[in-house]
Image 1: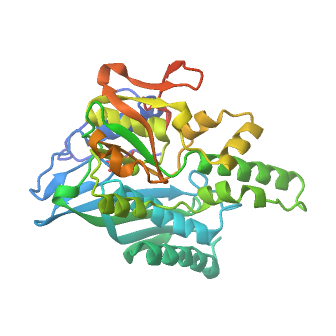
Image 2: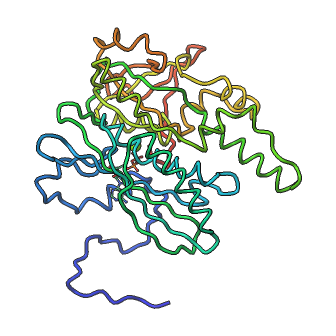
Image 3: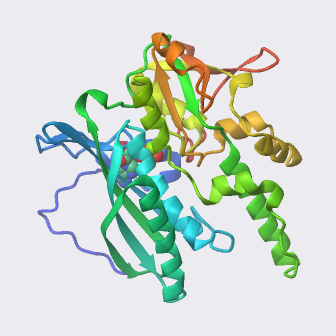
Length: 357
Ligand code: ADP
Ligand code: MG
């Protein structure tokens, strides 16, 4: 309704005379575009934008800094997401990026946007979940900010951690021939969400019908209460394995492979038959007429760790039940390829946020 007159001293960073749709740029294109004019000025800023965390030179170790935003209606639906689980998940999501750098999380700060729709008891539930996560992961909640929101619940979570300088692992670093490994199993969180959304639709039509989610307990749990893989970082240390590259699986393996490949300058070949998928995920995907392998590749929100190791480390990891070798790094020109169970080959496109390939 009114235009803000800019002062002359506000230099013009961008020279766009026409309207550009953000959706057409993709998430990475947008971040790159917005951040291109920000130079690193402080000598202690060791690495800025581009990895799971920013890296700060603290002398004898590196500090790791990361932030995540969770918005009601975008990242969670309070009609089926219990606030206690949400509090736990918010901490997990933030510190998962620190584990993705092979580090340990120490502190979190929480920004909250609340409307008067929320009672004290509701916010207490959210914080009870955060407290359980802080205890479980050994993290201190050391601050935050609280404000009113007119667009539902907003949770902004920032985390700080540390890693020994010689142990840090970046997204870039995979070498041709390295083995591609994933922890845990894939696609469960996505199928859990499909179940919860289906039951919500049923409930809206027949309000007296209470859903029976018992047979979906594992996948629903994967969606509602994500578990950051601190234990994987601890296990890698015990095994004396330092991955050559690593990322956490927030948007789905297909998208994360794209990030690892882009940062490392390589491609990946993966085998459909190797994808670790829980039987509950498989059964539920099939009942929705979905291909379980596609769910595993594109589902997202698994918060597993996806990493590469040199072939010489194979002996150390091969008997670990929680690690699955799903493929290997190839020359960049080979792109990211999936070899199917029927021995066909398909290029893996990153799905993630709009057009992120
Ligand atoms: P992740 O999924 O691991 O949280 P993202 O894909 O959200 O990572 O972000 C990729 C990189 O871009 C990170 O280094 C992150 O700090 C940076 N980034 C994301 N959004 C912004 C933004 N709005 N401004 C500047 N940097 C950003
Ligand atoms: Mg990440």
